Length: 137
Image 1 (tube, rainbow, N blue to C red):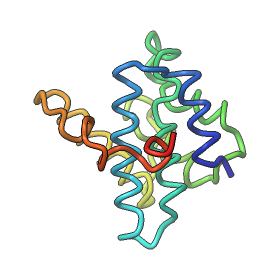
Image 2 (image 1 turned 90 degrees about the horizontal axis):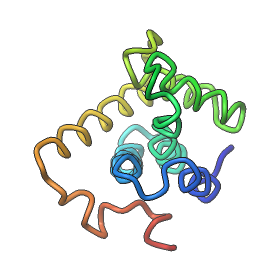
Image 3 (image 1 turned 60 degrees about the vertical axis):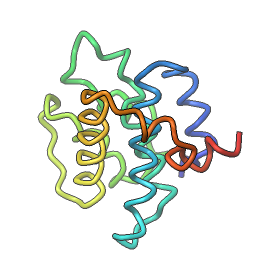
Image 4 (image 1 turned 180 degrees about the horizontal axis):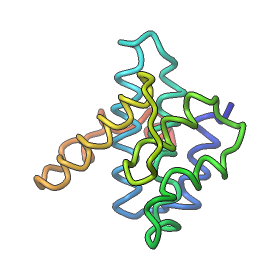
């Protein structure tokens, strides 16, 4: 399975220090926080949050591929449940997934987008909101 450390390297390669990177960090933090409530792997959920928009800049001209390209890049390095969640997080792909991981990714993604649109940066600026891997760099 793709670890948080390896996910971070891919993250830097594809998203660098863009606003989309900050969005993905917030989603990853929310996912890590939500996972224990569902008796799920916090590390896996954080990796999914970090990876969900990995292909963002590569799919700007074709949103129907957003998430699907990331799944192709990651291949079997993440479990099928994680692949499904990433593939289904954007409705424009037409992919549907009904597992808890997929539902929580869509929820965290939506909350992060709404928070940003409202101009709040508390989640992004707080050390508490930064994922574990980010605080240890």
